[in-house]
Length: 118
Image (cartoon, rainbow, N blue to C red):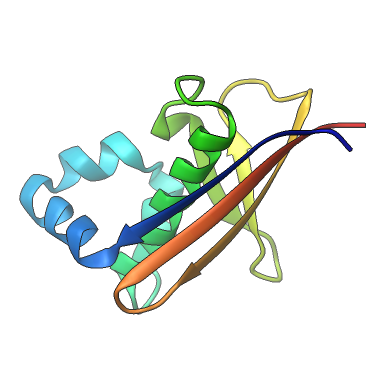
C-alpha cells in the first residue's frame, strides 16, 4: 500500500458557528453538500458535526496536496456503524481515502490518508 499523502485539520466550533451565523446558507452551500447539511441538522450538536465534516474536507485537501479538490468535490458520509466515508465528485478509481473525525464541544479534528488502490 503506497501512501500518496496525509492531512490533518482542527476546527474551532465557535468560529465555524460564527461564519454560519454571519453568512448563512451562502456559506453552508459553498462548503457542504445537501446530504451533509441534512445529516448535521439531524443531530443534537449541529455545529460540532459540521465542524467535523469541515475538518475532514480540509484534511483530504491537504492529503491530496491542495488545489486538487474544492469543498463541494468532497462529501463526508457515514456507513451503518458510523465510520466516516469520503466520496469524491470527480471519478476516483486510483485512490482510497481513509478519514477519522473526532469532536467535542469546542473543537473538531480530522485526519485523512490517501493511498493507491490495489
